Amino acid sequence: MGNTFELFLDTVYAPWRREIPDLPNHIERLEIDSGEHLPCLPGDIYFVGGGTLGKYERKRPIRYAAQEELIFVPLERHRFRLLALESSLVYFMDRKGLYELSIRYPTHIILYDLLRERHQQDIAFREYLLALDKRDRLEAFRQRYGNVLNLVPRTEIASFLCLSREYLRQIF
Image (tube, rainbow, N blue to C red):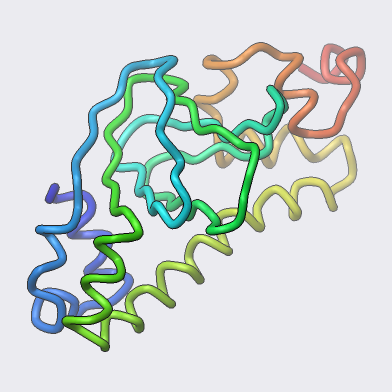
C-alpha cells in the first residue's frame, strides 16, 4: 500500500495499523492512464492517490475526484462510469476484501464509517456548488478543482455547474 493512502488513513483513523493489520493486503494499487476506465463493480472503494477522475452518467459529468478523495460504488445497480482525466494513481478495495476484513476485524466498521463520512463530504461539494449564485459557481469550482479546467472541455464544465455555455463563455 502506498504512503499517500496510509497517511490519509492515519488522519481518518489513527489506530488502523494496530486494529486492522491485514488492511494493506486487501488494497490494490492501480496506475491508470488518461482516458482509462475503472471497473466500478458494486461495493468497490477507490481512493485517489494522485491525478483526477471524472464520474459520468450517460456522458454527463456528475462528480470529479482529485487527490485524497474517495469514491464508493453503490451496491445497487448504477449507470455511471469512472474515467481517468489524467494519468492517476488509485488505491482500490473490492467488496470481497471489505467483507473479509469485517469478519476478521469487527472494529474495522469504525474505519469504514469514517471513510463513508469523508466520502459524503466529498460528494456534498457539488450540492454546495449548485446552491451558490451562478456567478460564484465557477470561482468555487476553480478553488477546489482548478486543474480540471485544463482536462475537460468547457461545455462539460458548463454542464457540471448547471450553467449555459454562453454564460460560462462570458465569465470565463
